[in-house]
Image (cartoon, rainbow, N blue to C red):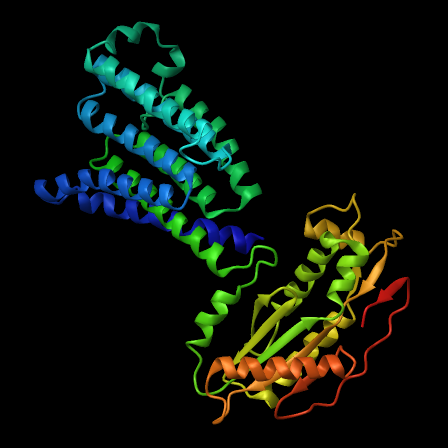
Length: 428
């Protein structure tokens, strides 16, 4: 799980790190180049909004609007000393409004952009910044300074520009953003987390030249990348089993060299599982088998081909070299005691693993797979032909009694299956 979380946040954190490293260099650029940098967030905001709209990611659009609107106010109202009353009040409001919007965006569910709830959410962000702009435009900001609470006047630390009220606001708003990321574990939530971190850095070191342009740009790029990552995951990763899907397999087949081996794997009596225990248990079986196949050794890679059928790809190996790893997988699955998930079983895998070690009277079933193996040869140069031959070998395994492996060019000796004691049903 830690690796999964690290993989989600790493691109966004690298962007923030890059923005920080570019900060001193950007300040040394000529005026013309600095001006281009200050315009970049507007173009990036438009691109991110179009991506979010096109891929139906309303939270991406809301976050882009929140960042660009705040940035526009900063560029037009805060390019002056914060000792001026109107500038200080504007800065104080932005430093509170920006994280609040980000916190709400993080907990939103995807309900579409041009739906009633989507339009309301969009209007709330736009109107809040529009009201602030009108107050600033008509010179009304300074009159609110005497009414600001002391927490908005006192800085949290003297070397930083963030007020105590803004610091508390960020601290509170971080909670839903982090919680959403931890529970959802999506690229969008990772980008939102990076965006609120970026806003905190930007507003804390507000006196640094071009800091708002660089960190808002980094946040927007992180949002754009998250759209691409989410789209890739939807297209190439199977949602149920979390292993690469058939489209990813087709891409892999186009890159294989002169020597490779394919194995087609099918769960035995899968329909019987569904008919006996229901589709929820059928999904458990698919996830369990996929998890075991994903741990294949020997340089193999597992893909979900469709339904209860999976594919193993072994680049650089022939049938003889791949068979020991394939047989090890088949034997591992056949001897794995699968406990039928009951209503009070937790979703957390670690807790579920601890419960499986206890004798709680749950029903245990045995799952087996049949496998067909084929390597590329001078006669079988097309990957689709190799798959077809492996599929034919798979059906031979079915006819031979299931829970066995058949190779097109080599027939291995089947290993004896170990017997397990206890209350279990075998579907081999």
